[in-house]
Length: 255
Image (cartoon, rainbow, N blue to C red; front, side):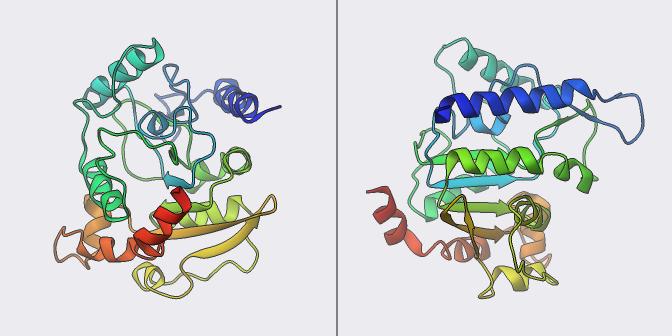
């Protein structure tokens, strides 16, 4: 199979895995479902990644949340428009603090205005490919991430990115486990790890070197934790992202 066929097969397999073991949203603690409106591996992929199967950078978050909460109605509307082939944008009327901050961070490494511009060398996804039931948030479960490890490893083998950017400690550790990285680092203080010479974690996946960067999540809590609860400034995270060896490296790889 070519990349597109492999990717579409992966999406169908992930969808089937959630359909075969549906969650009871009325049952406490069981609240992952599939989003029937999603025709990509993840709703985030509609922002950056749709049609991009040879990206240089793969951005990985933890989980998307619930597409059926009232706050997300606009993004589902945008997704339906995109699925129908109409001109639309994932971000229209749907800019969260996380998305806005990602715009600043990607700008710092040479990607101008990812809110409105599409880049063929970027691909966004979450490690957990299921979605929360309506009205649920917080309390990310390790089992949610683990159930999709095999699917994430397949995604990596299809996309073959050179760089993987992980948002948050749980995401980084999950990606490392999903890819069966040997000699994985012991992470105690995550802020210390981010700034250490252990970051990025370098591994080989299907014969290709991959650099796995662990950064702070750029939502409100992640940013506060990166700044030791002092403020919500992105200054430290902008410095962290310079570990992607700077704009010159990015420009050379994109040439």
